[in-house]
Image 1 (cartoon, helix red, strand yellow):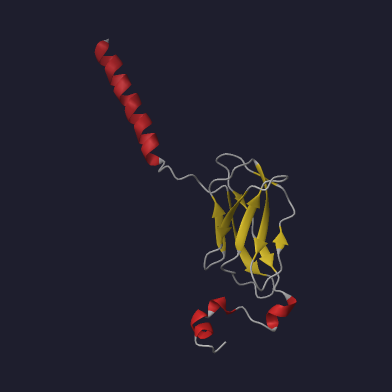
Image 2: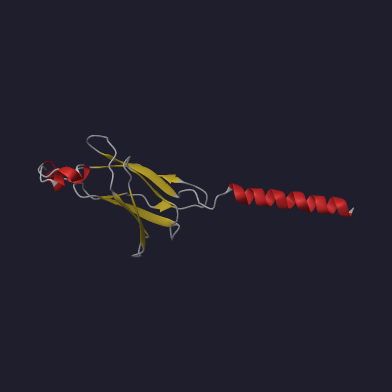
Length: 136
């Protein structure tokens, strides 16, 4: 009887520890997506994505990578609004209120429109060396 009790306890503790080890402690993204240029349909890097709590001034920010992807892993509320901003593009506020649920990822892809003035003054963030050399 004692042997089967200890064997069961041992197996249970092994299963629990393996389950804890399998999750690396990094939560899945709660919100993720990609930002594309509305005209060229190409990814836009460097877009500041703000997740804001309605009626509060608390927010978290993420920045899109070179392929236009962003993600939020930790958010302070169960409902947020998203805002997208980058120089050379019109500010964009995602119209829907996003509900955050544990262990569920919400995917929000958007397209941002270039400013009317952006053709006169192109965004030189893609060519920083040319900007430094004064060639752009």
